Length: 464
Ligand SMILES: [Zn+2]
Image (cartoon, rainbow, N blue to C red):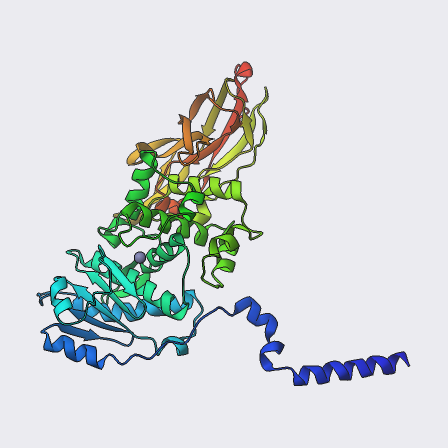
């Protein structure tokens, strides 16, 4: 009887499944992977192209872009290549938002690259309904951007407005300014690789040469050094403006860079990016289980204070644990050459004295020598081969984290192979081997470090 009931139940379940629509059967997977997107409106740009040519403007076209410009042709100009770069970027954006390429294939926008706004107004290509703008403006399937002397920056502006067009139309985005501007900066930042100059998404650039005139990292550096940086909660509240300042673009980009790359917050960020792309995005992010307000805020402060070209967030994640006391016995740990600030688990008391010794060698990079790649070996005193932030490469740095709101930073309290420390704060000691963040992947090995409370300095560290 029991068996029969179970059979009946099984048949019932089977029948129910048979009559459920396919999307319900696949429901679980859709919840996990499907994102919100809308099918593009198919615009016929022929009239606009015709009108542009009559007005003596140049028109370049690719699968996803009609580019109209009054910029005169110049030798070595790369304007003709812009639509192709745009198409390559569109594939990256589609991938980022999981919009199927079959949907994106019908998406085509029209952009005006402007030297003289009047010519576009006269040709009816810059309607009066478009508000005044500084560098660029996007209205769904059309955008306008002002010509720049630097080709890299011109491309960047085109892609920045292109991301706005993509998200406004295919995602119907109406999100807070920090995300709208931050993601446009994030998805537009790129380098061109190979002889063919192929678009490669490089949201955290490796070197200033890749992003001439962009200056986002320099702006963040300046804001941190002059005490003008913002807490992440305040960047979340940035208001949208048509004349966005360099500072606000840089901050919005840095928040997206932080959330998109930091292993502690990636999950919350990805969940938020499942949509909908509305005003409640920030709320959904900050109420996600993966978001911890106080540590998130501190991690962001540390991120912007250490940010630089080639920054690799995975190697810079900070262990904020408080650690244990350092008493009259030498304690031993190690500092890896290929990471940012590290926490050996030593809690220092304000006003106490400590002695720290570091021994051994590590590799802090490579140089091209006559016989191939040579390892740059360094002790904890560092080598004068190169300097970073005013200190020799490879030098052991000791610091404490100072919590001062947007001005929070690692405060250096000693450096080198032998350090006498008298901390100004009670809290964990952080150590790192000085290097450019972009070079950490090349580094190998670790330095041995030992610490003791200074009352017992007459006892030498064991030499094991
Ligand atoms: Zn923008």
